[in-house]
Every structure is written in C-alpha cells, then in structure tokens.
Image 1: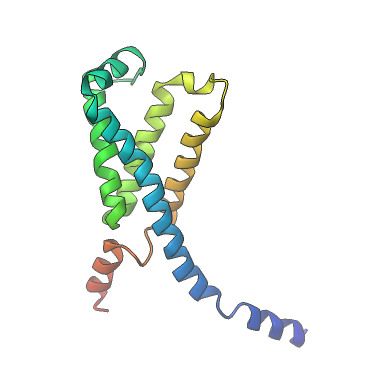
Image 2: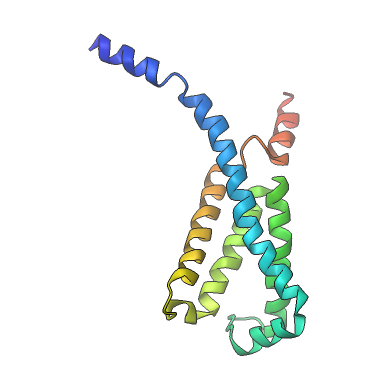
Length: 155
C-alpha cells in the first residue's frame, strides 16, 4: 500500500500547478473563442441594422420585448459582454449575460431545432456549455479580475 501511495504522490505532485495554469489557459481560450463568436454576430447585425430590425420583427419571437428593443438589447449584449470577456473584467457576470443572450436566441428562434443540419443548434449548445464553464471556474490568472483580486488581497 505504501508503494501505491508513493507512486500516487509522485504522479499527482503537479496537479495543483496544472489545474491553476492549465485551467487559466483553457479559460483564456474559451473567453476568446466564445466571445469572438458573439462579437462577430453583433458586428454583423450592427452593419445591417435595417436587416437586423427586420429579422427581429419577422423571424425572432423574443418574449416580453418589442422587436426593436430586443434588437437593441441583443446587439448591445453581443458587443459588450465579449469585450469584458476578452480582458477578463467582470468575467462571471459577462459569461452569465452572454449565456442569457444565447438562451434567448434559442428560445426566440425555434426554427434552429428544425434545420436539416443540426450544426446551428449544436453551436448554441456548445457556446452555452463553454459559458457555463467560465461561469463556474472563472477567468483564471490571465484576466483583469485576477489582477484586481490580487491587489485586493495585497499580493
């Protein structure tokens, strides 16, 4: 039993370092990947505002909001939350905000479920999962949130 414990100790001695630094790298990659997906979508909508308003009037059925307000709120979320994720500032609230934007897109556009190619709805599920990982584990070392926290703790 001592041999097994010794081997286990040797094999797991870098676990904390790998979790800390590896998790921070993974969080950074997720922040940039998922943030860029939403940011590009927001830029596309902003570039054709008339088309965006038509899309929200005719295709998307956002509950409780007028199509115009839904368009403004959706595009604002797609453009502002990714910027926060990119720099790692207020990362958990930003991830939660993008999760809400993503969820609203799925709820308000049920045609996503009926497309021949399931990639459209799968993308939303993947993005939602990535955002939940960021929400649960945070932005990691490579973020302004970490810098602020270190300053607060006097490190």
